Structures are given as structure tokens and as C-alpha cells.
Length: 271
Image (tube, rainbow, N blue to C red; front, side, top):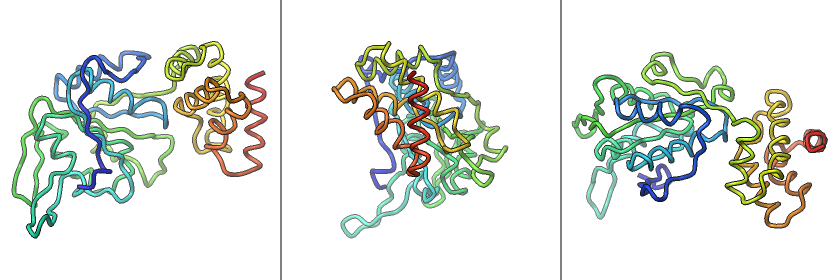
């Protein structure tokens, strides 16, 4: 398997990635894990879904396999394939197979971006069977109690040709994510960047104004990640106008006219 498909981490309790809960999502995740239920996270890009999964995996003390799904991702990329090594043909597990064997958490980020044959592979491991058939090796793996499958996608971004079938969605329990409220998001940005929280509030206001343009001039609004980047630049000494432009505005559009409009939106939001 190409190493770029999956990253593996098992963080000790003393090094849990920071995540600020906005509701009961941590408790729901833990109940899903304890009861061997697959979990689907739905929400806009950059609202904290991936950080949340990393936080919970570390909190539960389980290894985490993260797969960034894309148009070319196949079922074989997840389960494994035969490869030539030193003149021999050997089977190499994919990230989903390794997670099942090890009792790890497997996270499929933006699962609807993967090819349709991927969802077929997920069906037996997301119902009461909790099995992973490997047709090429003749194995049928039984998932241990510690294994958990988590998937995410952005319903607002996908078109009608890229969505999960009801037969797949109904194999998961689901959590809806969104951006935190202003004060909470400013506190997160402050913690991540080191910039004073009162200065972060203005940046969150800009991001909120940009998010309101989603579906009009913009495909996506500004993520919390971009606000952190902006605050980091300001903390490092770059002026606010430049920081806002390169971290919050330029990543959202390449159209000069739209960018000029976004500059005006930002100026109004800052006040």
C-alpha cells in the first residue's frame, strides 16, 4: 500500500490532540465505540471533524488509521493487494484491513469522494456481522470489539452524483457538525495560535461573514483552520490586512472580482 493513503497514530493520554467540545459529541462517540457502532460525521469542510476523531482515538487509547478519500480510491486500496517484493508476490494489507486485524479505529475522510465499490466493502463491516471478506486471499476477518469505523462527508458540498446511498447511511449512527459559536471559536483560535482571544474575535467575524456567502460567490466558507493560520501570522508580526487577505480570502477564490468583493466583506466585518 502506498503510505500516502493512510497515516497511523496511537497517542498517549498525555498527548491527546486538542478538541473543544460544543455538545455531547464526545460522549456519543464513546458510546458508539463501546457498543461497536459505526459513526458518520456530517458537516462543512474545516469545522473540526478530523481533529475530533484524532482526539477521541487518543482519548480511547486506540491506534488511528486515517484515509483521505478521493476519486481514484478503490476497494483494493482499503483492503489490500498483492505486490511484488524481491521477486516474490506477497499480500499487503490496506488500512481498513490493518485496522480490523489490530482492533484500531479506521477513519474515512470525505467517504463520498471514493469510488462506488468502496461502499460495498464497508457493508459487512458496518452491520451486525462486523466481518471483512478478503476475496483475493479467501479470508473473512471478524472485527474485534475494539475496532471502529468512522466516516465523514460534507453534505452541503456534494452534488447529486456524490452522496451516500440510504442503504449505506443507515448502517451508521450520525453526528451533525458545524462551526462553533463566535466566542467558542475565538477561544479555539486563540489557543491554537497564541493570539489574544479579543483579537481573534474580529477574525472569526470575518470568517462568519465569508461563510454566509457559501453557495453564492463561494463554494466553501472559511474554515477554522484558516482562521488559525491568519491569527498565527498576526501573532508573528504580520499586519492584519495582509494576514486576512493571504489566509482567509485568497484561499477561497482565484477570481479577482470576487476577491475584491471579499476584501470589502472583510472590512465591513472588522468594522
